[in-house]
Amino acid sequence: MLKTITALILWLLALTVQAAPITIASARVWPGADYTRITFESAVPLSHKMTVLQDPDRLVLDLENVELGATLKTLSDKVQGNDPYIKKIRAAYFKPGVVRVVVDLKTETNPSFFALKPAGEYKHRLVLDIYPKQDPLMAMLDQRAKGDAAPQEEQGGGGWSPSTDIKSAEAAQAVEKSIKPDSAPAAADNTPDADDNNKPLPKNGVDRLITIAIDAGHGGEDSGAHGASGTYEKDVTLAIAKRLKSLIDAEPNMRGVLTRDADYFIPLHGRVVKARKLQADLFVSVHADAFTRPDAKGSSVFALSENGATSAMARYLAKKENESDLIGGVNLDVKDPYLARTLLDLSQTATINDSLKLGKAVLGRLGEINNLHKGMVEQAGFAVLKSPDIPSILVETAFISNPEEERKLNDDAYQTKLATAIVTGIKKYFASNPPLARSKMAMQ
Image (tube, rainbow, N blue to C red):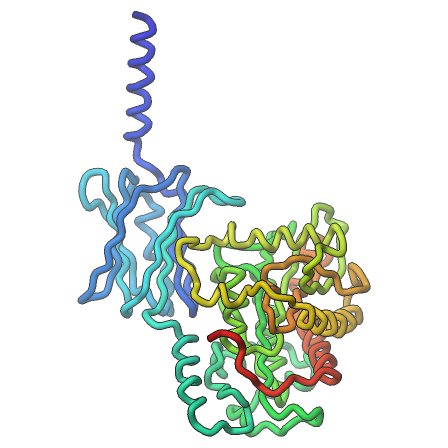
C-alpha cells in the first residue's frame, strides 16, 4: 500500500513539473547583412511550430507550454531600425498554453529554423535564421557569370568590380575617419577614389584588382574568448578587421572584403565558401585568443597543417577555434551546395606553402609592434583555413587573456598598428609572389 501511495505521489509531482510553464531565459536578435538571427534560450527544449505567411510577409512561431514573461514581451525592443529583414516582433497568448510570436517582415525572406543542444555557456536554444529570398552574393556572381560571355576588360579581370564589394564605399570611408591620422600610415589618410578602376597600376606587374578576404573571428552567439576586463574577442576582431579593410582599400590595386561586417555569426565553412565565391587571392582570419595562463602573451600567425599541429599551443588554439560552430550555432540539416566542392579532399601542399610565405611576411611585421609568442609561423588543423586554392592565414593578434594585451587590444591606435602590420606584410608577400592571372576556381 505504501509503495502504491509513493508511486502516486511521484506521478502527480511529475505531472506538476510537466505542466509548469517554461521560462524563456534569454531572447536575442542578431541583425546582419547576410541574415538576421533570433535566438530563444531555455533550460529545457522548446516545443514549437512555425508558419510562413504572406500579404503581408510575416513568420508565426507558436511556443507550447511557455510563459509569456518580460523576455518575450520586450523582444521587439531588441529589433534595430536598420534591420534589413525584421520590421517588428509581437508576442501574446494565442490560446491557453501557447504563446504566439509574430515576426513582421520588411520583405519576402527564406527562413531557417532549428534547435541547438547546450554548448559552452548556453542552454537549449531555438534558432530562427532569416535569410533574404536571394543570396546577395549569388546574385552578384550570376551577374558576373553573364558578363563572362562578353569580352573581358583587362582591368579587374574576372568581372570583379568595386561596386560588388559587400561593404559600401561610404562605410569604408567611415571606418577610415575613425582611425586617428597620427597613428595611421600615409596611405590610410587618403580616402580611396570612388572609381577604383582608375587607380594607377602598381610597379610589380599586377594588372588587376587583388581581392583579400578579411575574416573577423567569431560573432553573434559566438563571442570568442573573454578578457578579464570583459572584452569580447568578437568585438576586437571586427574592429581590427574594419581597419584592415580600410587600409587595404587605400592601396592602388587592392580591395578588402569582410566576411562579416557586424555582430552576427557565420559558420567556419561559410567563411571559406564566401572567400571562394568572391575569388579572393588571400584569406586573413583575425583573432585575439585566450590561454589557460594569463601570462601567455605575444602575436602569432598560423597556417593550415595536413600532418598535425606544430606545437601543443597550436593544437589547443585550433581545437578552440574549431568549436566555434558549436557555440555560434549551425543548422546541420541544411547542406550548403558549395561545401562539398570547397573542402575538397585533395593535397593542399602548394596552397599551404604560399600560406607559410604569407604568414612569415605578416609575422615579421607584427614582431615590430609586439612580442611574438613564437618566432615562426605555426601550423594546425584550423577549419577556417581549409580553402584548397586560396593562401590562408590566421592571425592571433594578441592574447586577450593577458591583462596588458587586453588593454592594448582596446586601444584605437594599437588596433591601427596591428592592421598596418598585417597589410604591410601582405604587400611584402605580393612583392615576391605576384598573383596569377584570374582563373576560374573549381566551383562549377
